[in-house]
Image (cartoon, rainbow, N blue to C red; front, side):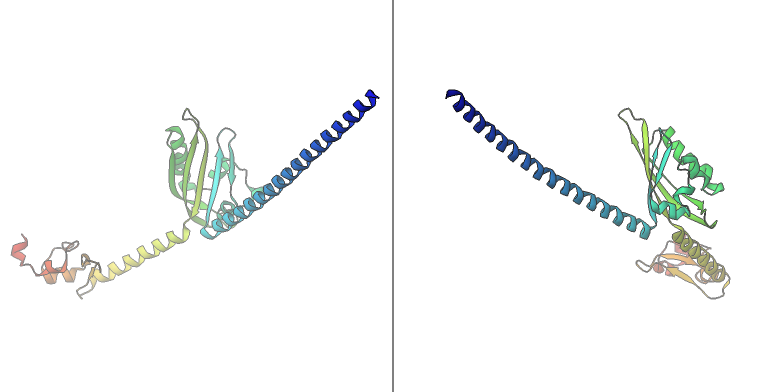
Length: 238
């Protein structure tokens, strides 16, 4: 009789343990399910963030790169491939392969900018240089900037950088320079008195020969002055 009572008690206790374990497993399953769901949300959020970054880089013509010095492994964002006119399978993904796509006349300067910063232990470097697109041979201008990642002893482990296609800016600067040169060439030989002043404060930026002679100034003497200086007696200027 006593053995039966002990068996019943044991079975009761066993059922309670089973219920407790089952409840615990259910809670673990719910927690795990929520964790997986959160992870998937994080993955989706990360994917969407990466897509936004890629679109932003494409619009700005700016891409990112990373160079693992220990393994000589170079990683590029999609936009850098577009800037260089390359497809991933066409690129060897090494530092030397990158240099091969730099304009030959700029290659030594680009190599020295990077290698020199590593050799001297500098944290950053930046440079503007030309590249030659692989797909059509077009020469384009880029601004490159890099930040080195070091260990606790100051040794550079990897380099993180960006490449910005500034070709349109360079073309605009060149067009402006040529326009200014044409204006100056015409103005210098014109018999009409010509001057150019800054609108904000009236500072004279340019005068032609006819203007200087009319007011008794030497060539370029008026540049940097203001209009009231024109009316100072020549004897008082000395």
